[in-house]
Length: 341
Image 1 (cartoon, rainbow, N blue to C red):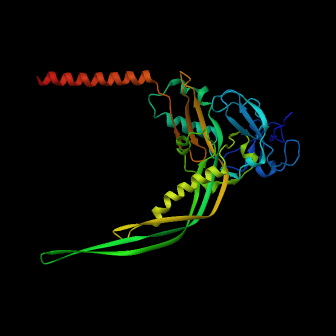
Image 2: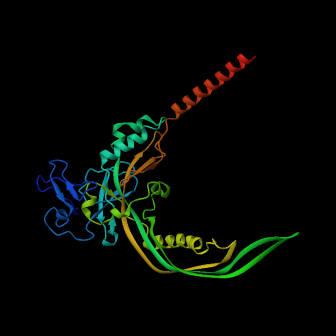
């Protein structure tokens, strides 16, 4: 039978949870706190913690893969809210290099979310129910971070044009210059999602993150949260980053501040590439909607509170408001016409 790592409270034996914005873990039952350093030195039975010994769960309803370091026998899938079941252990190759811990706890995230929703007048009321909002889940999403360095060259021709007037003549002089440029370019904090199922527009919508808060990976940060396993290979993410870099190199190498025109060829050779596999925090809320054929996803940056997502509208209320507004406009126009005539 598979065993799952858990972080037990030394005072009462219940599971500890990481406290966002701190380096401590707290028992939600008795209030006892322990530091990250204390808890990462031993497991629930006192054995040393080993790399790669964490578990993957698989949602039998929607197929989402979830990684957690806690004993989550009654947890729910954050995509469809169905229970998840234990699968085989993850291999060490999927151990992240680092993560940005949650700074916003669930209470603060809910407060910010409710404030955000208070400005939306035509939301589906069921989406605003306490039961629905309580489904807000803290999830660590996998990303690839890259740093690419290389040598850029430019060979081309620049022109400078001067015009003077002498008597009845307008004299234009064009000078041609051979332009050669070389430079060592460095690109940092290149980001690519490491989970194919995540909508890039949605995940990119909660950026940026402050990478000064990046911590070395520790299982203690996952306690009380969910985490997704990557399914995008490093080579694929690196190739995509290099395409992005190649698109930006000409902008840097072909600046023509001192020329009226500049034409030529730019080349870039990668000399160094460093990749890191990291987890970034997000609060996510899913709503199935009335027809249950189009789920609505909402994401909040677990570090900064930035929000992004699609929200369900109460179309009947929106239609009624539109009809009443149109009727009022028509009534005013009719009244104005009657007064004029």
